[in-house]
Length: 300
Ligand SMILES: NC(=O)c1ccc[n+]([C@@H]2O[C@H](COP(=O)([O-])OP(=O)(O)OC[C@H]3O[C@@H](n4cnc5c(N)ncnc54)[C@H](OP(=O)(O)O)[C@@H]3O)[C@@H](O)[C@H]2O)c1
Image: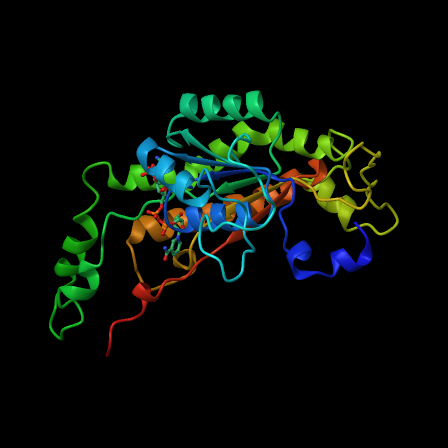
């Protein structure tokens, strides 16, 4: 990669050659990310979700048979123009049925990705659900003068029966750990494909590692990289996990529900813990927290 091409915004924000897995990739934010990554040059984007029809519709919209890659800016999904890929090539966008609540389903998806590509460069933990809906807190007159604490108690208790809380935590929190763990060997393989040495470098991830990081006289060793045919010498990208949490993780105002906010706070924490724990393994972890205008405070 020569310096002028590095300075091009399309290269700076490019996804050239990346193998990406997106849970909940068939709709909403996941689908938008898949379209952006497709047009930014990703070599493969797996869309994971439970509804195969939804995944296939999304895949066909992003990558129509006769289309090619467009520029990200100013183009719509599937708009032709770009790299001139022909419809006969293997598809970039691959739908993959997966329920992130199920260990067997997640491992089967990871195995399918391993079989096809043998590696993952970016894993996006995006699948999420809201609920149970506790917005009755804001609509049942609990702010009215004279309302007793029993009314608040009723609202707090109303959604604890059933499996609403467990389902939200299983998808929004537990699956972050399950899916990340299932794809770890493939993320390490993504690093190896760029020439990074595998295994742990340094002692981070525990208290000993923390002490080492704080000791300037004992800096951690650096990961070695060897040239790989077909990989740019300055392509030093490392594999990464991106977890889509929510502004609700930090919001004291209950928006989509107590379970949603708490489960997203857990997702933030897991993303942070993984960033620390996986650093010695050369695997990055970041969390993004989208907001939503539908979460705005009601008018006073
Ligand atoms: N939209 C917003 O304003 C907003 C704001 C803050 C945070 N977020 C977060 O952003 C992420 C995407 O949200 P979105 O708005 O794009 O919602 P969405 O369109 O409803 O997408 C959620 C996706 O998750 C998938 N999913 C749900 N349960 C699953 C399971 N058990 N296994 C596998 N996939 C599952 C769904 O597919 P299937 O049902 O087919 O499985 C769906 O594709 C979520 O984590 C959400 O909490 C969104």
